[in-house]
Amino acid sequence: MLHVADLRKSYGDHVALNGVDLDVEAGEICGVLGPNGAGKTTLVSVICGLISADAGTVTVGPFDALANNDQARDLIGLAPQETGVYPSLSVRDNLRFAGQLVGLWGAELGRRIDEVAEAFEMVDLLDRRAHGMSGGEQRRLHTAMAILHRPPLLLLDEPTTGVDVGSRVRLLRTIKNLAGEWGSAVCYSTHYLPEVEALDATVAIIDEGRVIARGGSEDLIAAHATSAIELRFEGEAPETLASLPCRRSGEVLLVETPHPAAELSAVMGALGGHSHRLRAVELLQPNLETLFLALTGRRYEADGPDDDPPGDQPSRSGAGVETDGSDR
Amino acid sequence: MGPTDASTAARPPSRRSGARGRIWAVTLQDLRLMRADYSFLVIMVLMPLVVMGFLKGAFAPAMVQLGVPDANGAEQAVPGAAVVFSFFLVGNVGYVIFREHGWHTWVRLRASPASTSEILAGKMFAPVLSSVLQLGTLFGVGIPLYGLRVTGSLPALIPVSLALAVCLTMLGLALASLCRTIMQLNSIVNVGTLLLGGLGGALTPVESLPAWAQTIAPGVPSYWAMRGYRSVILDGGGLSEVWLPVAVLLGFALAFAAMARVLFKVDDTKVFMA
Image 1 (tube, rainbow over the protein chains, first blue to last red):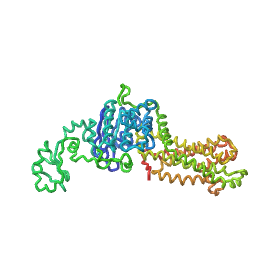
Image 2 (image 1 turned 30 degrees about the vertical axis):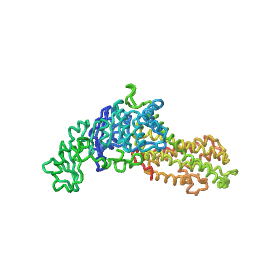
Image 3 (image 1 turned 90 degrees about the vertical axis):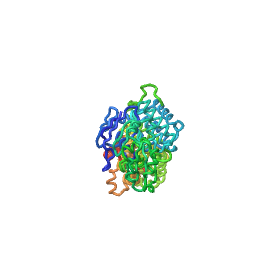
Image 4 (image 1 turned 180 degrees about the vertical axis):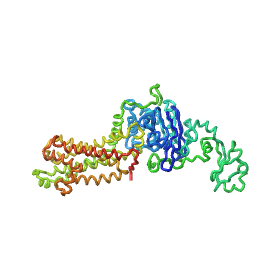
C-alpha cells in the first residue's frame, strides 16, 4: 500500500530525510520509531503532500504521491502531530465534517460516526463542544476524524501525545482493529517504544533521516539487541574496565553481557579508582531500546530536537501539549 | 467496530460527491461555525443601525444642499453606514482562513482529498452570505426605521449588494493571502475601511469631498457601491441603471481574485494570535 524509496528532504543545511526506504503492506501496522528530530514528521508530511520532497519515490496504492498527490490523498487518513479539531463545534459536527470531506454523506455517514464514537468511547461526548473537553478527549476526537472513513493508508503522527492511559489503550485497540479487520496499512509514528510492542507492529527505526532497521520487532531484537550493564559516571567514563567488553559514549559506559545481573558484582569490582565517580547503574534487557542502542551506539532519547522545518510549523499548544512524563 | 462483509473493508471513500461535494462540505462546515458563533455578525448589523440614527440628522441639510429638497438624511446615512460596515466584514474572510491555522485544522484540510481551489471555493460562500445578510438586514430595517424614501426600484438594490459582497470577499481573500498574522489583517481592514469608506462617499456625500478626492474616488469599490445605491434611492433608477456599478464592482472582484491567486500560498504559515 505504501512504497517509499530513497526519499530525501532538507531544510537549508539540515537534512531531515537522508534516503528513506520503507514499504508497508495492507493490514500491516508499522511503528515508525525514532527520537524527536529523527525525521518521522517530515516523512509523514511528504507522504500526504504537505511538504515537497527533494528526491525519491512515494507510491500510495497505485498512485505516485509525489507527482499526483490529489489521487493519493484519497487513500490516506492523517492524524497530524498537532491536535486539529474545531473547538466551537460538537464532536458530532467535527466527525460529520471529516466524513463529508471524504465523500461520506447521509445514513452511511451517521453509521460511521456512531461506529467510531463507540470505538473511541465517545458516545456520551457526541453532542459536547470540543472546547469543553479535556486534552486527551480532544486527542481521541482528532484521531477518530482520521479513522472515520477507514482509509486504506492511515498515517498517525504521535497519536497518543497528551492522552491518558485508558484512552491510549482504547486507541491502540482501535488501530489494531482497523488494520486487522479492515485491512488498512498503518504508519504509526511514535517515540514511545512500548506502544509499538502493544500494537504487535513491525518496526522501522529512523535515525538522522534514515531507516536504520526494518522488520518484526522480535526478529530485530533477537538479531541485534543485547543485554548490558550501563554505568553512568560523573565526567568522562573510563575507556575499559579490566578485560570486560565495553563501549564508551561520553559519560556512559556500556558493558555488554548476556547475564547482566550475574556479572554485576564483577563489573563493580573492576571499577577500581573510578568507583567514586559512579553515579548510576542500570541493567538493560534485550528490547527495542537496547536494539536502538546496538544499532546507533546511543541510548534512545525521546526528547531531542523536533524535525519540523524551522519556522514552518506552529508551536505545540492546547490539547497537543507534549507530556513526556507522568501519564506514560 | 467490525466488518459486516468484504464490501465494507478499507477502501477509498465514495467519489459520488466529487469536487462539488467537497466544496459543499467546506461551506457547510463554515456555516456550522457561523451558527456556533454569530455574535460578530449581530454586532456588524446592530452597530450600523445605531450609527444611521446618529448620522441621519446631520446629513439632512447636506442632502438638501445637494438638490434633494425633501431629504431627511436617511438617503446618505442608510447606504453610507451599510457600505462602511460591510467593509469590516472583509476581515471575516481572513478570519475563516486564519482560524484554521490557529486550530491546526489547516493541515487536516490540506491532507484531505480536497484541493486548495476546492477548499478556498468552499470558504468563500459563508463570507458572501454574511455580507448579503448584513446588507439585506441594514436596508430591510433601515428603510422603514429611518423613513428612507427609495425613488427607484427596490429590487435593484439586490444586484448592487450581491456585487459588493462578492467584491469584498475577494478583497478579503487577497488581504488574507498577503498578511502573515491576523493582527496585520485587522489593522489593514480597520484603516482601509475608514479610508475607502471616506474616499468612496460612504462617510459623507462624495460631492462634499475635496476636488482631488473626488478625482480618485472612482478608483475604490465603495464609490461604485454608493453610486449604485444612490442611483436607486435618489435618481429613481432600476435594474437597467445599476448595471455599470455592478459591472465595476465585479471587475474589482476579479482583480482581487487575481491578486489572491498570485499571493496565496497553501503552505504559508498564518499566525492566528498575537
